[in-house]
Image 1 (tube, one colour):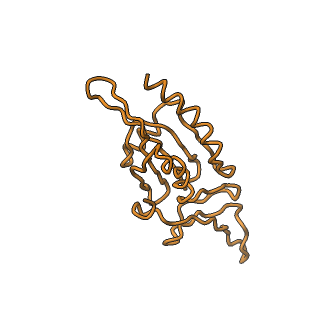
Image 2: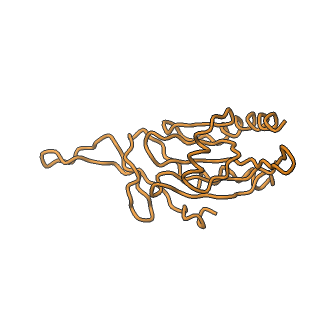
Image 3: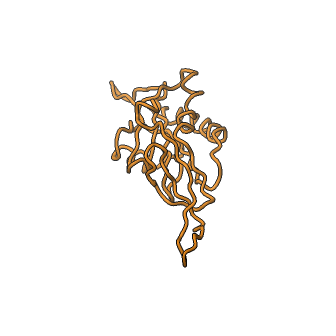
Length: 173
C-alpha cells in the first residue's frame, strides 16, 4: 500500500547553514528533505524527531495480521508534508434500519513543523484534504497526539488506544 500510494520514500534531516562574511554558520535548524527528489518539505529545529512513512504504516501490522483491521486508504497532501494512512476496523455496527457506522483508525504523520502525529478512531473515511480535515478536527477522546520532540513510541500509543477501543464499544452502545 505504501508503494501504491506513492509514499515509499524517506525523510532525512539535513543541517542548514547561513553564509556570514564568507563563512558557513550552522543555523541550529535542519531541512526535512524527501529522498526521491530532494524536495525540502520544511525546516525544523535540530531537536525535532521525524517519523518515516514506513514506520507509520508498520504501526498497523499487528492489527492487520490479527484480522482486526484492513488497510483502506493512504495518501499525502501539500507535496508530502502531510501523510496519512487509514485502516478499517473490523467492527461495523448499525444504528437504525440500515444506517451503518464503519469505524476506522487514522494515522496522520506530518513532515511539517508545528504539526503533531495524530492517531485516532474515526467514523470518517479519509480520501482527500476535506475528509482528513474533518476527521482531524472532530472532537474525540479516542485520539493520541504526539509532538516531534521525542521519538515515536508505538507501544505507548497502542496501550492508550486499547483503552480508547473500549470507549468505541461504549460509543457503539
